[in-house]
Length: 287
Image 1 (cartoon, helix red, strand yellow):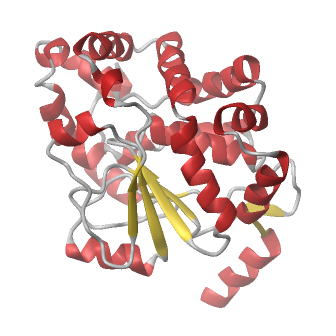
Image 2 (tube, helix red, strand yellow):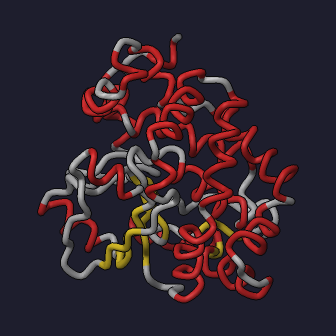
């Protein structure tokens, strides 16, 4: 399968060197969710340098910590489970001036051997329907974790934050989609953002495969391990349809699973916006 093959390193580096990717030493798959036009609020864009997504930050270097501070990030949310942190020996680092908060989507009991075997089998199938079952689980369990991020955005209009899971694909991808959908970003744009993890994770390909090789299901099935990390646009498009049909859309999901009010949601949406004229003026200033 073509999307399982390694990508050309020079192509990867070319893409990683430009927006929305952001270089943070020791952290992969860092992207800025800003700069996307809203189709529901003409003249508005998602605010640049405000919300970032990434893979785990356990390996961040001292240089990376300084880069995080320079980006203005004041809060980092970790969506990983206790089981993952322990299994991969990847604890949260200490970053002076930045508050790191552990908000697992799944609790320890959700990582029983039986649950993980079932979850890995779904991933390994590579089928869109299997990913939808997995993403439904994320939505069903993720309300409290996603609420922490949404409340931070509600209460801190001028402070940047970043959220991550392990690879920055599934839990992180769902959270990013919720935010972008709330801002009225087109589905095709959200799906494209999701697919960029295919490139963003490439520098850690060997590390990811080494980790997965320790899982019984993947030990003798290299292709199944690779399928787990596919990031196809059609997967995200199917998820956005699921969000509408099963959960009543992003606003209803936030109301019912995160327990935020209509006025909370309006504040979050407004805090995520900036005028497209403002961004254009800032770009002119930088030239």
